[in-house]
Image 1 (cartoon, rainbow, N blue to C red):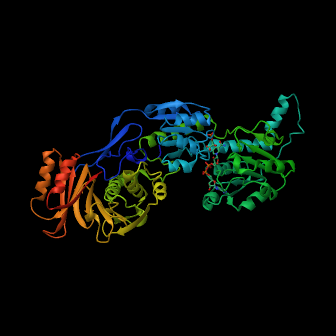
Image 2 (cartoon, rainbow, N blue to C red):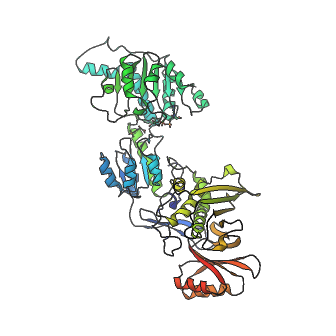
Length: 600
Ligand SMILES: NC(=O)c1ccc[n+]([C@@H]2O[C@H](COP(=O)([O-])OP(=O)(O)OC[C@H]3O[C@@H](n4cnc5c(N)ncnc54)[C@H](O)[C@@H]3O)[C@@H](O)[C@H]2O)c1
Ligand SMILES: O=C(O)[C@H](O)COP(=O)(O)O
């Protein structure tokens, strides 16, 4: 499997529905939707690790189109696998609410309705192939559902099929075969055209296009290509010149299509572009039917602009039985067979099964289509900071007074690393998760963090503080500031007027190191009580004995003060949740000016 690292809470964890931050009753968020609960184990000074503490139920994977055995075997090792083919859209919507993952090929539309019908349970859609035009990516992202594909395993198969269509078309293989089977012997009718020395325009110089180009060179063709995004040196390396769209279509004897179907490529071959082509051009399409205006192609065939076409893909699949294009005498067709070799299907099945299993375990797949890909080594390095980021977000939002809308959050990363040597997308996503989950019923992950923040009008700006010193550690500290809000704990407002919390990672454990303008130091495990008080002897003892009476274990205590006997903030880490009565008794201590209980 491609590089990935376990960050279990990241893709799969979903918060239990929670009440407002002022309530004392919401549940810790680290439990996944398919019954794997994830907890941070380890006491003070021990490195926290993600641990699977319970596996009450296997996840369910719906395989909606035929998948190779090797892939099914991998899935069955960890999941209940429901292979249900040819589902109607309604049947798919009904089943999906019981599934954690869905695997499809190109024949299943994974529409917005599917994500809505899943009720939030669907965590990953695996496309066993390349094209993801049958998956509503925007809807997937909005629902926090990861989409992964299998982009490499069928490349050669598709390229070989392109070449098969090219040669079969040029020598009328399919038509001659049908003719001879119909009892005829038409040697004059099926005289073909030669390939050697002819110009082939490869439209889309990606994985498949470049393999087609390489093979066509071997057949003695002159190959040019149009691809606005392909590097010219990669094309040059195999003797292909990248040219403009107009040059590619105007000079070609053969045009082979290999771009994805996107709004920009939809019907890119149409009346206008056919009119620019050399009379007698031949078209091959193993990409997507939608890149050709099929009516325009029929016209171009009828007037002789296009001599022949060989098509593996269609706007509507399967095409209607009376499709003029399919029935056209000079058109060779196959039923979307580009990826259909034994080898490619085994490869695709393994590639997609590994990606889906990884995603269900909370790993980030390198074939994610709607989430940033983060290399495994970066994930490993950032792991404790990712935990810190989420906790700071959680703490900061719980400090906001009810009624203040959180709109503007500033995050400052202090690091000795150069800005382009620190990928903060994970950290920003986790801060967003921490900020949003305690105050809403949505769950946030790397997939939908930016979308969810935007939708809620939450602006998160990021700043870098460049430190001198060794860049060995990715980060020194993370500071989260919420502007233009009131706080339920006024000491959390810094001199510059924002709710401010700051933290560091010490010995692998996230620590809270600043609240407002007060320096504290408490490890972020369990829960935290913050007390603002006039600094005086005996405070730690008074609070400690109230908690001790209730058998609440104090894990850490730290006092930050402006000056001796002036205002101070005491941060107390507790393993258990104190009762409301104990919290009230702490609040009633005469020197305590305000206090707040914060759950991590
Ligand atoms: N028939 C089949 O069974 C089959 C099998 C595999 C792939 N495919 C299809 O083939 C296509 C290519 O697959 P791939 O794996 O090579 O993908 P790829 O992403 O590696 O390559 C696509 C290339 O198209 C280029 N491109 C994007 N917009 C373009 C435009 N407007 N004009 C020209 N080029 C453009 C991209 O820059 C990229 O280089 C996809 O549509 C895929 O779904 C079909
Ligand atoms: O995009 C692809 O990978 C191909 O079109 C293959 O589609 P299939 O998995 O439906 O054969």
